[in-house]
Amino acid sequence: MTTETFTLPDVGEGLTEAELVAWKVAPGDAVAINDVICEIETAKSLVELPSPHAGVVGELLVAEGVTVEVGSPIITFVSESEAADAGVAANPKDPAAPPATDEGGGSVLVGYGTGGGATSRRRTSRQAQGPSGRVQGPSGQGLVRSSVGVIAKPPIRKLARDLNVELTEVTPTGADGEVTRDDVVKHAEQASVFRNIETPAWGAVREEKLPVQPQVDDGRSESIPVKGVRKATSSAMVQSAYSAPHVTVWKEIDATRTMDLVKRLKASPDYADIRVSPLLVMARAVIWAARRTPMVNAAWVDTDSGAEIAVRHYVNLGIAAATPRGLLVPNIKDAQDLSMKDLARALNRLTLTAREGKTSPADQQGGTITITNIGVFGMDAGTPIINPGEAGIVAMGTIAQKPWVVDGEVRPRWVTTVSGSFDHRVIDGDGMSRFIADVASILEEPALLVD
Image: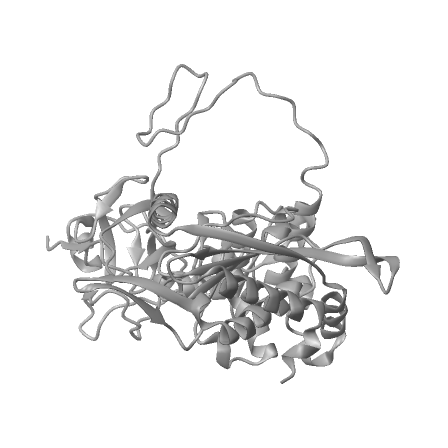
């Protein structure tokens, strides 16, 4: 019997290893080209691997949870015809699904990621209505109805699982009562507001350690392995903290006019399909201020002939995102060229993709300056660590109503704190102070952006 072996490919730039998180197929499964066969976690994100082969799964060569090097064999395939001749019955599929083979009727082996014209049994069966409870969506994509009547597409169900959202508690707004992506995200955000109302009791264990090597003690403590995104993040933060001399400055500001602008944009028909938040104004402020103080957007570079400072005349704006897989910092390329509306759309796409764990390695490379929105966690200010390869990171604190002196009178105003950490090798105190002051001036008066 002819066996084809599929090795772990490099799904990013310079990937050397990845953890096999979950298999989506089992031995005996009939698969088509581009069917998802497994999920892997790289140092950057969670990635679904499509099958390069149409045939029958032979053997799974790597167990879930194991980290393997690029080029290592992970799965074998045989053609359906050879599997049948050998008396190996493929696992049953939907009878409405057509076969996916080449013109000769045999198996097809192609390079990783090939789009191909082959029809996937799994995708086809998801589009057909049947007794399993699957119903046809308006766009032709399969929706899944659970036993309690929730209608949602498979990607939406995965997003709900990642965000710990119970779909039965989500109010659907889609066609025919379908739960949409925005429904799930909105529910998760609302739930997070109330998650700390009840104070949990102290646990019986006084101390918990997190060593590198996974091991379980006598039940009094648990060890968690450091790998994947957490491993990459810890390495990058240590490198940054101990190579770049950090200095932090901050300023408390009246952001009432920013909140008024956000309210107007939310009510505008032009932004009807876009989620708007104060982070949008903050992003525009950072881009504007970086143009006035270019050194915050620069980077320290060590070369064979000595050190130099690379000054970038463009902004790849990084947004630090807390995801189920750990901290990610994807960036919006050439953010300086985007209009307010296009920047809002880019922020929406970046946030949703990061929460789903689908941020590509390319989207996390080449950043020039980063924003971290610690206000979503109720924090007023912080001293963030600079992302490697950059010279500055700006933190936006929570926006809350506080007493503020306006024209000699104390009035309630929306107040926030903007702080920033900078590489003192690249930028001096006057430059970083001027930059934070510029960001603050925009949040105090967003009309300054109209220039």
